[in-house]
Length: 126
Image (tube, rainbow, N blue to C red; front, side, top):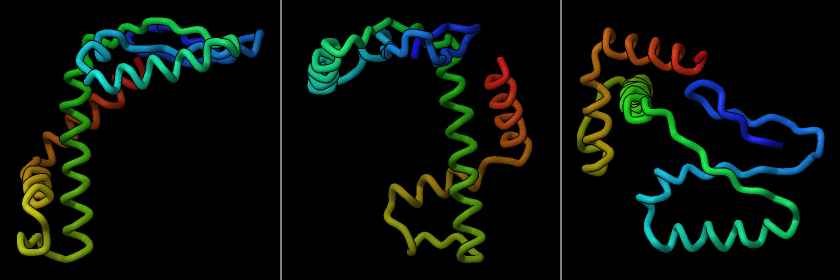
């Protein structure tokens, strides 16, 4: 399998050699905690003897926007799912952090959600 950069997305495809290539997003990895970096380095060092190669990937410049739109979609779905399950959203049913996420999701307008879903579909087809 090899990783190929196509537009703003990175895709994985089967190569004729049946070798594996692992793509590492170095710009994101730079923000990881030390123990995460060490664990990844150890994992990769164990794979390299089997012929695995490692390439550096560039994350799309729009990744922050992707994360924002994904958050809106996920939180809206969370609130909707709980509303359907219980008929109402009541704070006493949840721990504080979960309630805050449900409340945030319930305040996302249909227009904002539709815009996020449209962005998601356009980005995936890019």
